[in-house]
Image (cartoon, rainbow, N blue to C red; front, side):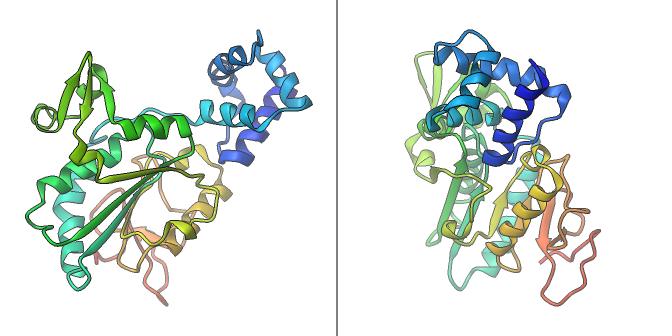
Length: 283
């Protein structure tokens, strides 16, 4: 792979998805895009780059972008964020939203759906407390193919063994051949749609909780800042934002601050307050 070809594909990925790749990721670019090249009857990454440089169609550009932005996921990833959601975030929202009895949750870059389905299973376990409430989970991802897989809710034995307690496998899944499908009740709790995080978020509406975990690490500083600013506009003052364990708002956004004692959860800086990047009182 020559430098010009690498830079060309990287520019396309940055413009279309926000993904930023360093030079040492050339091997990843080639390994993920060779299957795309073969689908277009090409024999090498070089031929793919020549086609892109010539007259690429939108279908090819989408295939390249989706191949590079498809990331792994698993149920109850890192465990702690979901424990916090059930024990801290949900009770506070039940109290704060008692007058309207509505909660909206967004799982951004949801991949194959394990994150939003994990949230749905928690909400089902808390069904008695949520009687009479309207709870919406919107799950989005850039890849149409991945969204279709997530909507189907079918997983391999390996995938259901990663983070999913056996009790939940028995309760919420049924075996279909050598795979496992999450039941219709849980699937119906999640609305899936394809969406690009670089786009205007206004059409998605407002969210009380946003899970945007392990996404910002793929963006450059300016893109991180832009995405966080847009998310802030879609959240009420007492909303909650989840980021991944290796992600932070420090030096990136002055709209969010760490929720007191809760690593990985952020709240909006109160209107008119001076941002303190280290802590914000839990709402």
